[in-house]
Image 1 (cartoon, rainbow over the protein chains, first blue to last red):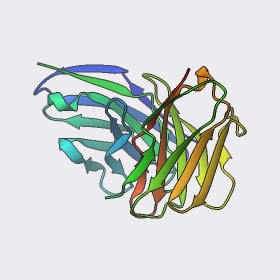
Image 2: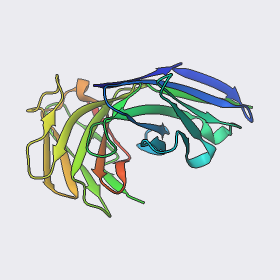
Image 3: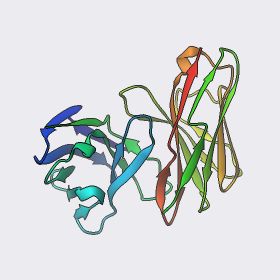
Image 4: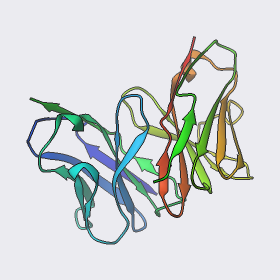
Length: 114
Length: 114
């Protein structure tokens, strides 16, 4: 069984500041981990995914995440926040990269202020 | 990249009527499709897993007679909410999966039952 925990349902940063969204996972098998972004009334867009290759994963829009097995973490970061980054972010885990169902965290709403 | 078309994007229906939501993979064949439900400001809850040509697998607590899923082809899955009630009002999202693109999400359907 897999699960993810996202610490902080709401994160607020200033424009230009570092973005850090936390995700910890639990998995009985080597996990595949994902970060998605959701804008209001829209579906989910994949930011990046970890599939057991490089532990530092670079995604779209300047986001990246580092898989740390010892900490069971997969935190999402971006060096400099932009107003357009304001959205809901979901961390997800699956047992493999394709046909297994995704289990989502509860989400973190990112607010970016001037 | 892969595109999943979900229609309609929003629908309002009267209590007691049925509503069908379509999910199409436009440029790839989806071996598996997932249907999720999302309540306001909450995460995605998996409702069922749909494989082409076979019966859907429903998650615990999801009424299969109320949420009918049909996966007639490798590019189309439908979710029919039967005898809809106001408590069925929600945001429904589909996800299509294949070995090349992984998980691709539709843009969601906002269902309001009045």
